[in-house]
Image 1 (spheres, rainbow, N blue to C red):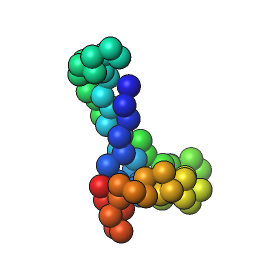
Image 2: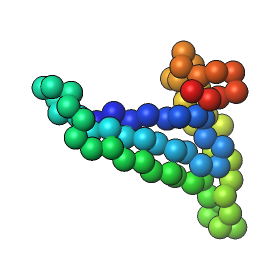
Image 3: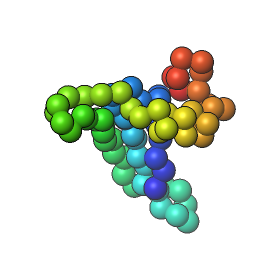
Length: 70
């Protein structure tokens, strides 16, 4: 399975998935999920934690433009 992040998250993290056959890389299925960061006490969306943004920024650096877009 391949997981792709299109942009650095703000309050939401969008993930795209591809499931491919190992031997031939034939595309078998695609999917998408959106995760939301929530303040549990107030039940409100909040910005993604800075620690997560730092890790994602470092991992995605070569493929992101300065504004965090792919």
